Length: 103
Image (cartoon, rainbow, N blue to C red; front, side, top):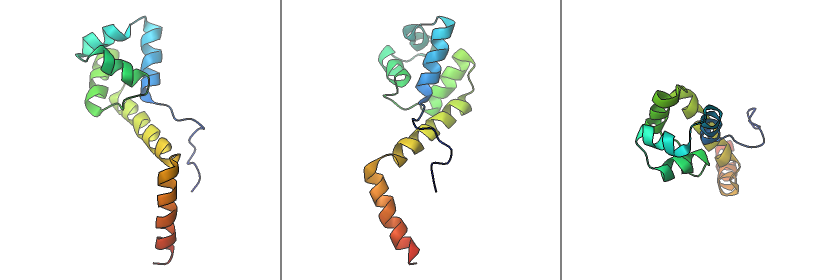
């Protein structure tokens, strides 16, 4: 089925948020305080070590006016692309396709 037009490297929504706050001169701590999360949670999201949830996307939308649905779309694309690149799931999917081909 190919890569469905995804680039070589998935983009975590945290990268977009991080770029936006840097361009606005907002610190991660200021963002965390404004949306009621701890600095460590915000830092993990911005550095792609924690997934963005719908609840957090809505809080970021309220703080930065970045559409929550666009952020969640990025998270979904990121999840799908990283899963497609996971060797363990690739093997499982290959086995499922073999079984499905004879059904």
